[in-house]
Image 1 (tube, rainbow, N blue to C red):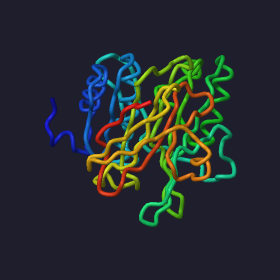
Image 2: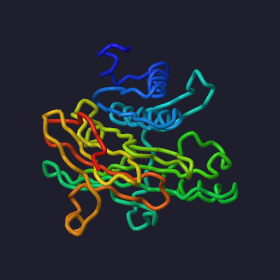
Image 3: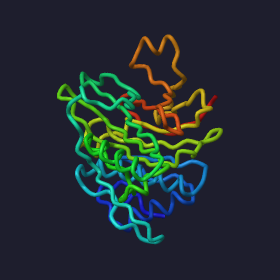
Length: 273
């Protein structure tokens, strides 16, 4: 196993990234602050996809603008992903498939996490049109270099918006087969600091995926407390600051985002209903 010094380092080499992906393939827990990923159950390809997204997020937290992945070794697969993608600034032109996962105000700073989900194209022509539409919003699907590679796959982009100036950073990039599913208690989560450019801050912001059958997720924090995230109800609809599980259109997974209490971070997550 890697040393604690390596685990907390922000300077990830290609070898380090390959090591993370190898661990994910064996379905183990990887990483510590500034970003954490809990890889759970399911197939090895799914674990690898989550590891790629988690590693990308780690680089966002520690070194904005760097390349998260560059020429993965071992299996011959290529995976280059920009850790900080340009984002369209005009909210009026936001895509119709955008879903706000969570929002709130922390120490006077407004924040929001949203996800854009792009429907799986049926053929190459449709995929070309989808890629062109994505590009208008600064979104580029991970591990996709040609239109044919996107056919039959759903692309997800998670963004973090912070401050009065609404600074937006892409923090998640996940491409899935449209027929992929999570079952029972399977889930994947990533955590990182709330504010961009502060890789040494406590990774309080958590987002992740659960099965569509999940009715409740319990987040346990390192201070011993916990928070339950359930489905939308009349009460939660009236209060946008209450975290809930969302079902974005076209996504084979359900998604959630939550901010840990001050001075603590994620200990673990479990599907409890």
